[in-house]
Image 1 (cartoon, rainbow, N blue to C red):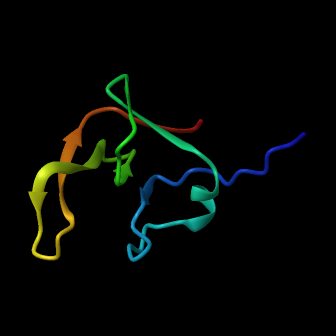
Image 2: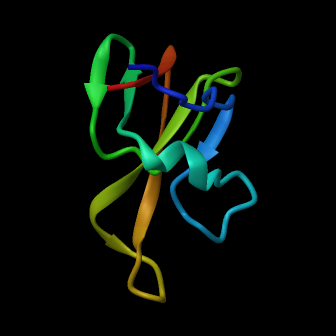
Length: 80
């Protein structure tokens, strides 16, 4: 049984309106590890620049979407 999963890009966003969104990658479960800790709420990541963006638990923008917080460190993306 072979899995034909596309290679994970260096920069990937979950928002479909983003130019960094790759729909084929989201057909499979993606895991993100930041500084050795697996994060489940990542909205966007960049491996080469070493950051992820996660939604704020309380702060909202003017459209009601959660504000994104940037967390820096060592980023690893993998298929779960």
